[in-house]
Amino acid sequence: MDQIVSDYHTHVKSGFTPLPVAIAKSKNSTLWDVNGKEYIDFLSFFAVANMGHAHPKIVEASCKAIQECPLVNTALINPSYAELALKIEKILGYSRIVCMLSGADATDTATKIARKWGYLKKGIKEDEAFVLTTSACYHGITISTHSFSSQKHNLFGPYVPKVGSISPSGVYVEFGDIKSLEEALEKDGDKIAAFMVEPIQGSAGIVDPPIGYLNKAFKLCKKYNVLFIADEVQTGLGRAGALLKSWDDDVKPDLVCLGKGLGGGVAPLSAVIGNPEVMDILDLGDIGSTMAANPPATAAACAALDVLIDERICKQSIEKGEIIKKLLLNGKLDGIKDVSGSGMLRAVVLNPELIDDKFNGSRIAKYCALKGLIVNSAAGGTRIRLCPPPTIDIKDLEKGVNIFLECVSTVKEIEDPIL
Ligand SMILES: Cc1ncc(COP(=O)(O)O)c(C=O)c1O
Image (cartoon, rainbow, N blue to C red; front, side, top):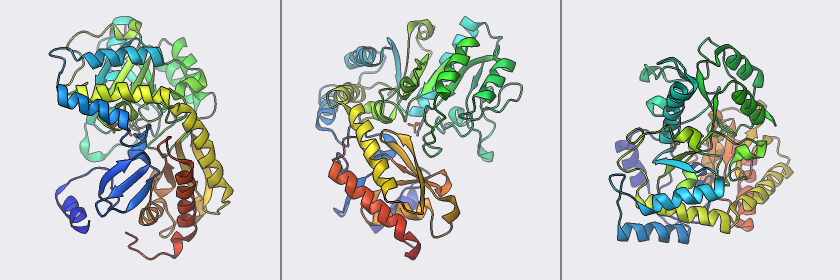
C-alpha cells in the first residue's frame, strides 16, 4: 500500500486531502484496502452511499446498461433517462428534470435556470439577475459554484459576479439568520432571482439551521417572488432522514439540486428537478454535457430510487441516526460537545476548549482509520463528519461508535505520525 500512496501523492494533484488508505473493495458499510484490511465506513465517500456500497440491484442495473448500450447521450434518446424522470415525479412530485454529472453541475445549472427565469418571468433587467446564497455555504468548487462561497481562494479570481452571500446592496446573509435574509430581500428583492440554500450545511461540518428557518426563508422568497432553490445534493434521498430534507420544514422548493446518492453510489449523476412553471423556460441547448445522463448512470439511479423506497432508506436513516447520536452522547466524553445533523448525516462537535495539536479532527480521523473506521475531519478539525450508509448493520454501527469513542479518548497519548 505504501507504494500506491506514494505514487498517488507524487503524480495525482489536489482532491480532498485523502487519508493514506487505498481502497480496493466495498460492500454495504464495509471497505477493504489493497492489503485486505477491513474498515467500517462512517463516511460513505462524503454522504454518497445512501443505499450502501455496491448494492447488488444497483450494480446489476448499471452493469446491464454497460453491457447492452453503454452510451446514449442527448443526440438521441436514452430510455432510462425518461424512466428516471417518471420515477422522480412519482417519488418526489416534480415533473421536470435535467441531469448532469456532478453536484456542482447541478447548482450551476440551477443558477442558469434561475437567471433565465428572472429575466423572462420576473422582469429583472438584463445582466442584473442575482442568485443569493448564505455564509459558509458549499455548492461545489468549479469556478461558478465556488463564486457562491463566502470564503474564496485569492488565486482563482475573478469569480462569477451577481452570485453569493452578499446581496447587491451589501447585506451579508448569514446561514440560519432569517433577519439578514429578510433585509437582503427587502433591499434587493427586485434584482434577486433565487435564494439557494443547503437544508443542513454539509461541507461546513453538518451545521443545522434553527428549526423553522427554511420555512420562514421559503415564505420570504414567495413574498418577494424569488425562487427557492434547495441544494439537497448532500441532504436528499434519505441521507438526512427525509426524501428531501426541506420537506421536514414544510417547504416545497421551486428547484431542487440532487447529486451524490442519486447514482446509488455506482455512477456519477446529478439533477435539477422542478415543475413546469419554472423548468419549461428551458430550451434545447440551454443545459447539457456530452456524458450527462448516460445509461449506466440513469439505470443506476432508477434502481437506486427503487431501493430507496423498497428498503425504506429514510426510515433506516432516521432510526439509526437516533441510535448513533445516543451512543455518541452516552459515552459522556469531555472531548465531545454535541452531535449535529439528522438522520445519517451527522457530525460530532469537538469540545473547542480541548482542541490543540494533539486533539483535533484530523488526528482523530487518522487514528480511527488505523483502528479500522473511516470518518472525516471537518470545519478545520473542530468537527468530525459521521455519515455511515443508512443500510449499515446495527452491530457494525455499535462497533464503529466504540472505535470512535476509544479514539477520541486516547488520541492525545498517540505519537505522530499516526498513519
Ligand atoms: C450541498 C452540496 N452541493 C454541491 C456539492 C458539490 O457536489 P460535487 O462534489 O459532486 O460537485 C456538494 C458536495 O459536497 C454539496 O455538499
